[in-house]
Image 1 (spheres, rainbow, N blue to C red):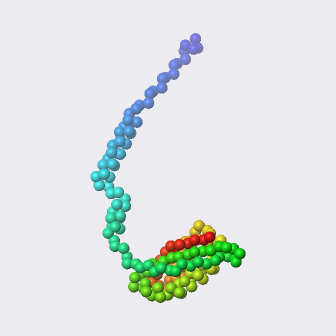
Image 2: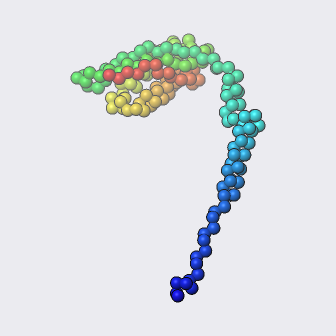
Image 3: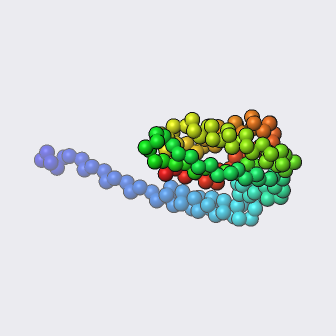
Length: 159
């Protein structure tokens, strides 16, 4: 009899599908609205206007002065390693002749600096960046401020 008097458990209610259906419809509507707004031009795509502005700017006037190739032996006499270094100087066109006239001093600065750098430093991954920055600063001191804009390394071979 005890079994007959126990109340039966209420059957669980089925979850309503309305929230899922409404969420799906809203997601589709928002996605379609966003696509339309972007496609029709109501919302600009990032970078589009800045690319158009940059394309209209003319390139600055520059000249390049080639630097003679430097080949030097590194380390001890028995250590058969060599460094081959060539570059070009980016200069303001009005100073190109003056910078070319100072080429012996520029080569002296390059040779002096590269001889002082240890072989282990040359083998590191960031060596070229550091060497380039150091040489550019030294060349700018030799040539005078505002004449040399950049040092472009065209060949850096360590063997």
